Image 1 (cartoon, one colour):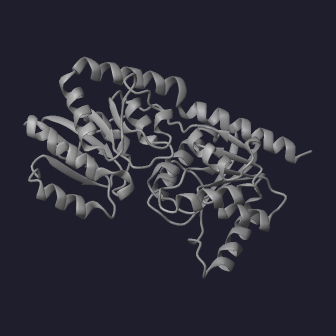
Image 2 (image 1 turned 90 degrees about the horizontal axis):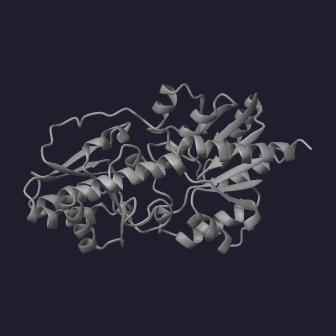
Image 3 (image 1 turned 120 degrees about the vertical axis):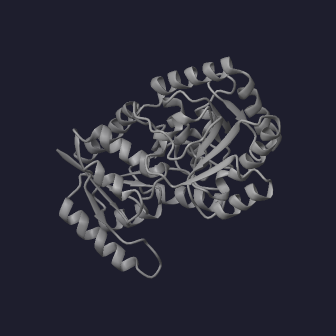
Length: 357
């Protein structure tokens, strides 16, 4: 069985890590995998799925030699036929410098607005060393090509997730019509705009509630905003919850108000449990949602548009049901982990075939 080493700069509980776990679960009968990454919240999920893991330190300017020595030892011990790097383009250079004969696949998971142009420029530069580059959206592909990466080196493979029949009740009792989101509480996720939009909606409907699953540096600021708007009895912060997708079924509407998303994996999680989605038209999200057909798209930071979309779905149950069904059908037809794995397998086989010649 051929061996694939996954090399990541972190392993928390976010989209990149979920992507890796879904991919390994779908291909574990065909390849032997080893995940190499610093310690993070997602490691417990690796353990629960019996996915082999080897720890490395976080890469910084002061420990480059230590980092390279640790990676070298892992590769010498595991002897991978292929190295698959996720998220950190600088790791392509390190892998190729250490083992130039081992083919490298790099998956670009997008870059936030901070240092946007620099990140895509650097990613395009380092990606030239990879044998193949996978982008999770056409949005990412176009940005890398604009920065000089050959279009012949890039393939788009949209994220996919497994269909889940699991579902869990919320850990606290929440009565009423629930609008919900799951996200890291950072500025990029735009949760404050959802809070402001919900404030407008709550003026019209007494029984609406907002449930926010996730944690991050913006949590305190968001809690203060909820207090300032005097809607603390209607907004619930549930914090970081492993397996957050299992709670989405409790929502009548799922909202992703991001200012940037390379793809938006959590939209698929809502699609998969037939919950209608409202999301912002940023990054790769329009590649998932067809506005008015299987979801609703609104401009980022537009509180009025977001509140109006929420009101529309509150008042139109038939529309909610239709969007939920169409979203589920799109998920089944285009965005399952099996389809993602099939396309990734094709990349692996092409690269491995070329390297053996």
